Amino acid sequence: MFGGVYNSRRVLVTGHTGFKGSWLCKWLEILGAEIAGYSLAPITNPNHFELSNLKVKSYIHDIRDYDLIKKVMADFKPEFVFHLAAQPSVLESYNSPLDTYSTNVMGSANVLEASRHTDSVKSVVVVTTDKVYRNNEWNYCYRENDELGGHDPYSASKASTELVTESYIKSFSTTNTDMPLIASARAGNVVGGGDWTENRIIKDAVVAASKDKKVLIRNPNSSRPWQHVLEPLSGYLLLGQHLHQRNFDIVGSWNFGPALSANLTVKDLVQLMGEQWDKVVGEYHIDSNAKHEAQSLMIDSTKARIVLGWKPIWDIKKTVQYTIEWYRMHQHIQGNYG
Ligand SMILES: NC(=O)c1ccc[n+]([C@@H]2O[C@H](COP(=O)([O-])OP(=O)(O)OC[C@H]3O[C@@H](n4cnc5c(N)ncnc54)[C@H](O)[C@@H]3O)[C@@H](O)[C@H]2O)c1
Image 1 (cartoon, rainbow, N blue to C red):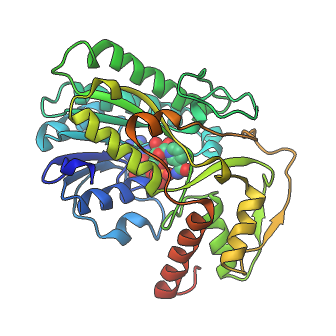
Image 2 (cartoon, rainbow, N blue to C red):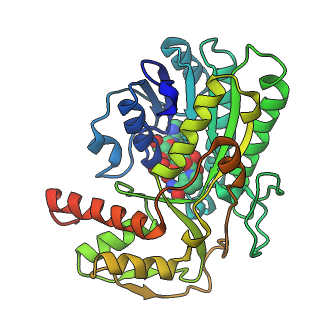
């Protein structure tokens, strides 16, 4: 897969202790890569990073420390950088806007700047989100050239990350062929086994179900593009491959969303989970004082389909099925979730 480009090559993943980062490391491990990770320590117990037993050289440091990330790159000499480290929660961003901005915006600038000063680096993929678009609550899918925006601090921080990335591309990436090539990737709401982050619907639902409780839903009518974690990761790996091959057409921003049919409301998703495991039952409490979150969000991945040949593989039913199976298997091995 990916033209064998990762085999025996050095890859740095920031955010490797997190949900998506640990899955990416697992895939890279299977592809034969030599991997280093740069992140804070995992904050949940259990967590997918420790469960995966990864063969990764792990650097536990803050992404806001430019000197450290630069030193790690100088020592490890990666050819590929996948930047996933971030404060990834909309709700948490209301509690800690400054931490969110410093981690997401300056953290990304640090990674791009360190990559620019590390001769070995050929390819940098910056992971942002579908929430970078100015959300007009309309019924169209957002495309890569739609306006950026951000109501909450998380979305604004990721839109800002896009601006920083675009500036690095325009200033350094295309004009000088010795510099690493850079792309940004915007994915939807990712689900899959091993996500223990607070306020994520699948984790909340399986934990409640394992205790024979209903899962409390605050935004039942919000619609999101749900996708399995492996889907956008395949897009990131494709970007890394093409950037490494110095394909200048790949420089820029990319959507990796699910098929339109995977845009479900939270309520519909809970119902689908209930079809896989009858103990998953929702209890709906619409909180009129809840912090603002977008109601509707869909992204268009035509560019990735046409240019990269990327498309989502699993439909929403299979995505939910494999995710629920993962947690039930884990619960079977570990015992009831406490
Ligand atoms: N999970 C989703 O649905 C989703 C959707 C779209 C985009 N994303 C993006 O994907 C990336 C990964 O998200 P995730 O769901 O795996 O989140 P996660 O919380 O599981 O992982 C976040 C990672 O970032 C690291 N990190 C956070 N602050 C840091 C700091 N100051 N210094 C160093 N490392 C730090 C953590 O240690 C962890 O490894 C993020 O950039 C997120 O914004 C996630």
